Image (cartoon, rainbow, N blue to C red; front, side):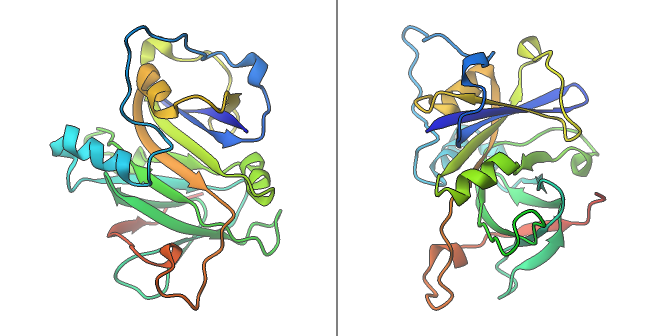
Length: 238
């Protein structure tokens, strides 16, 4: 299994994410970092879900209680269902869907209605690690969480997909072209510590995880169906 890297650009900002999926361009990865002597990273994307977010709140107490907008994108069209503590049923939104999520929290959502994959249901999670600072324009600058066809195919093959989204340092910005969604995708070695790599290249913002597990509706203790945190759902133009 290898790790993926993709970039997202919003004006002068650029996001990169890395994760585990099928290999595409491992030989041409332009962001390989040599080992840094004496560098130690206590955090890893393989930590128990929610651990990195909690460490972020300890390191940056000012993030506690902040709702960061997050935008969920799918390949073409589909439905995104958000789980909230206020409703026994998930709240349905057309993709792209946007919601403000507590920094440090882990949110699960359901993706269905993908025309390319009839009948497919996936249950990703997003762990929010940090916030952006577009004063007065928070909803216009969400963290982009894009699920690509390659990642969906990996899940169908029963692989686990993990991506770390981060805000890139301007001096390390890539000159590569982006597609219509603002993304450039690469593969990186599966042995990489994605949190450490993202931290060296910028500021980690979120972790997306997608697996093939389906919830058990007969089991009220199924972790896919419980533990919803408060969130604020926004309408968003496609």
